[in-house]
Image (cartoon, rainbow, N blue to C red; front, side, top):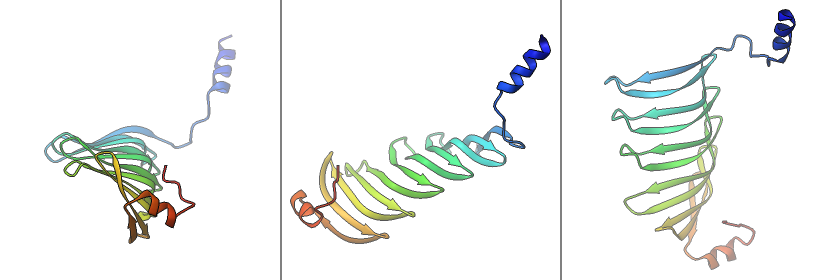
Length: 160
C-alpha cells in the first residue's frame, strides 16, 4: 500500500527543471541596509524583485526573467513617491510608460519602443490633458494643444 502511494505521488508530482536551483536572495548596501531582494533561479534573477535606497525606501519593484527586466515595473523617489512606471520586454522599455512630476503636478504617458520614445506622449496637468507630443525614435516631431487639431492631423489615432 505504501509503495502504491509513493508511486502515485511521483506520478502526480510535476517534473521540475533539472539542475534548476531556486533561492531567495538579499543584497545589502555598504551601510548594512537592504539593497535588493528577490528570486534567483539557476544563477539568474527571476520573478519579482524589490530594490531599495540606502535610506531604506523602496526604489523599484518588478519582474525579472532570465536576468532581464520584464513585465511591469514601478520606480519611486527617495521619499517614497511614485516616479514612473511601465513595461519591459527582455530588458527593453516598451509600450506605455507613465511619469510623475510632483513639483509641477504633471503626469506624462509616453509610448516607448526599443528604449526610445516612439509614438505619442500625453501630458496632463492637474489630471487635465494639456498637450500631445509626437516622437519618432526619441526625436521630437511636434505637438498639439487642442483635441480638435490633433484629431484633424491624426484621424485614425485614438488616445483613449
